[in-house]
Image (cartoon, rainbow, N blue to C red; front, side):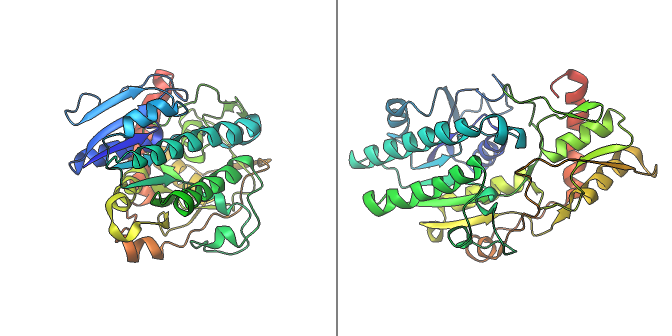
Length: 340
């Protein structure tokens, strides 16, 4: 089986490519390196992996790449930390719409031409539940609650409408996946990120785990966090997410369905800060300073994970402690080398 992964050089994309190769897939990746610039991966020279540096908005290129693949994982997007929601409010909507439209246009065209493409698997986001008033957020709630307030969350909801509409009109099969708060190695400062200071340390990406880790490593004390620390997130290991994504690609019961992919365990920002602090500083007491939160810093993102478990047999089992044991050394090295 052969799969095209768009956004293959991205944070989640890297985990997905590794998992696909591990499971024996032939993989074609496409990325324009717009987020981090050129990056190297351990699998770049793998015999079953080929890479194309290109723009997913180039529909003709996408048609050529889709001509002989069985599946497409649509992960390409303009995406960054919460600072992106403010600095790139228009681009997050307009550019990502062009990316998803090009993906769908190419897939529809090649299927008309008799290509073997079976399905497109779309990576959405937990941010489709940005305005929810019910927890845990279950599949289907995104159409019952108010729409997301941020342009990023709204566009990710639009991705899901693209998927459904392409099926309704052109019978292009789909699966929609919503990863929750990916944690892992390989994430770095984006080229266009907005530098925001948190106390005496600039935020790395406005993603809470790498930001807190790099502040603790750099010796910030007291430690600055955004908001009162009661915000709840479900921090999910990138390797677990990749397993869930790959499981959904070829699973017969995943066709024309949507799934939340997440750990079942919620953690507050204050609890996360304490866990990171203890990993780095041992028993030294933690003191927190509470800075103003960003406008779109959602108070609770709590998913229902029952559907993915029952239909796909997927559970995210890596503990936060184990994630931090892998991530902290990587971030320490990245800080030392100037990546963060």
